[in-house]
Image (tube, rainbow over all chains, first blue to last red; front, top):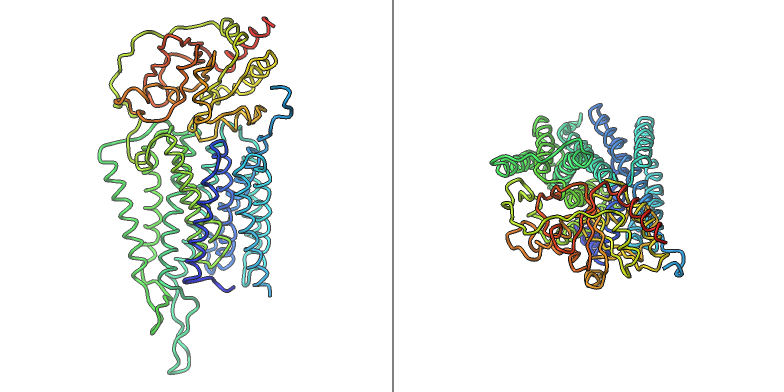
Length: 100
Length: 487
């Protein structure tokens, strides 16, 4: 893999930071919790990093820590997804205008 | 070739995350948002198995499958009211994972040596080298991830009720500061005790003892615990949001360490979005973030017993039923008490009944009602309340003056007029719902005790306020039968 380094990494950092700011800045209060939960799921991407760290482990110590990392990260991703999905499932608009 | 496929898949995954989050910011297509993000996660995870030079697949599979099943089961099983602590728990796991990546990288560095060539006059070779910037990011990511890990677990324990109350003592802030400085110092030692490849700025090995590394993580864990224990339950949402942002940042930093674009982008986006969200939440409580983290809000010493004239006047459910059935407009203010009593279904039943009788019913949600912003919205949505009759503070506050009945169920501080009138009150300045402007105000409450912040509420003593004592669900049930009898 060619790692991304130096100034390119800084560019990515800056653009991603602005993107995150933009996404949140116009959110209604009612979606704050689902969105927090959703972003909680998104940082579950740490799983791929944990997999790489574990896969490249050279000693038993590294392997053990890598294993813990993968275990935690998978929990973050799966749990974060299910909780968010369950929350968002409930957001339904009212079916009829007439029952108002 | 496979490298390009992986890099390209990460790019797509990052795009899917951003689109997913964007979709989640509007109620209509929020549901698709998480599904899009989910595809991104699956794609990124699957291609990672093809990463070059990866080993230990069997154990990796065990870790992923066992953890996924546990998380799936726990997340499915948990009641809607307990969602906030589950978010804290999963967030802590993410922080821990980021810290684990940092630990592996730092251990590698600490155990690395130069390989002397067997041929004379040949320069030694090195397995691995990093720049100082990457090393610093690894250390910072490890610190932040560890703090988010232990802090989130404390937040989880507090919301789950495993840990009651707050722990405060004299000099706590100084001690926390020392712990933080100590962690930074250990990090500084790791960043400076290194060996560079001659003639370059690349670091190939750390000369720090492995004990320093251990002490660094232990102290960071302790700091995470120490900074969270003095914070009261009412402030937990803000704190969880902060830890969520911190985990994002840690993941982003470790992404830079591994040169992994998906982690860089997703982590940084979550980090910046999370910090903004945290600030929005703190602002909704009219407090600064530092105030949440460092002040002793709601401690026993806050506010001398204030003299409030008048008394709390009780009312019977039957009378409330009459009042509501003949009202034109009813506003309902739910709070944490509704969540505890699981009364949201009964409340919706009452709402439907009233709407059938031509009463206009709306829900007024304070930004920090419950234990998380949007907590009430989630519960009401669970019960089936359409989101278009749920109103935010700004939208609904002028309507109280024209409302016949305002029903407060399990909310307290968010309707306390002291926040407007009493400059001595600890919550002075917090925007509140103007419940007292309604012609009649009914408060469903378990007993005469004070709210979460421990502050007396003048609304409960007002002339147009009546108290309906009892469990939220039972009380609402009684109102429903009273309304039914009349129609």
